Amino acid sequence: GPVENVTIATDLPVPEPGSDEVRLRVRAAALNYLDIWVRNGWPGIKLSLPHILGADAAGTIDALGANVRDWEIGARVAVDPTLSCGECEFCRAGWENRCTRFAILGEHVSGTFAEYITIPARNLIALPEHVSFAEAAAASLVFVTAWHSLITRGNLRPGESVLVIGAGGGVNTASIQIAKLTGCTVYAVGSTDEKLKRAQALGADAIIPRDVEGGWSRAVYQLTAKRGVDMVVDNVGGPTLNDSLRALARGGRVVTVGNTGGPKVEIDNRLVFGKHLSILGSTMGPHRDYVRVMRLLFKGKLKAVIDATYPLDEVQTAMARMEAGDLFGKAVLEL
Ligand code: ZN
Image (tube, rainbow, N blue to C red):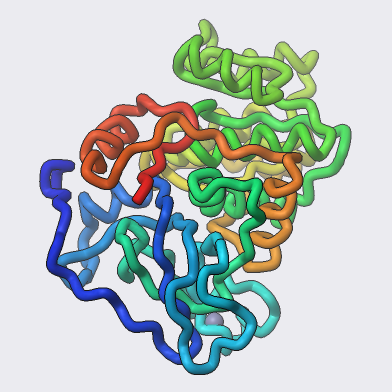
């Protein structure tokens, strides 16, 4: 339901960790669009209520399960938000995000907007002292998602050109930075001057207003001397996918990482075979990608973009701002 339906529960028990889990004292938890989708629900969604929202968290270890040997109480950690079985063929091959029992924290299972959560120890990464809990929480889901789509799925190479659809969202701010770090030329499409300016500050080489006359895909075509770009990162889906295909150079690929604008789309297939295009789907990322991208964050090569932090009491305000498209980067709850 609506944002007003989100309430703070004060009578939930402190959870006990299973044998391979730890209990985390959450210090920061970041909001994602996922929280809004879950809150609104979809046909067939089954949640046990009260449901705790939230995919991103960082904090300190508060208790250890019986089999957990590699961690100590009090350690500062961040949480990989992808849950997996660890046993299926995809997990064994290192593709935890393709697990047959794949889940995201806060989606089908209890999430991170809580003082204490339990989490499998294999989902943790040690958080260096110089990185704040808020930065780690803000980075986790969006950076692993962006890294996996651009680098692992999209095989982005130095010298290529990348168009990022949308400038202000968390995944987009991560994608712009990762493309720049790779040595690419980055184009960003955004809805407001303010967001476009901030995308430029993050490294976008060229910015294009979403409602530019003639359409943004034509603008990209002109900016690239009618060549098009090598990769488009599209998390809007239905309303944008055809324009994304049009903006691609011959042999280019679009990585589709979400559908904030709606899931259904009719594609002009002549574009796909005629220009030798690839459409690559990607969601979340395996643990090895999470570790890789978080280490770049810890080294200062990438940075978490935080719009604002809120106490847990103000979760409704934070969520309403996200829903209104008001944020540049992430809203973070501090607990
Ligand atoms: Zn699995």
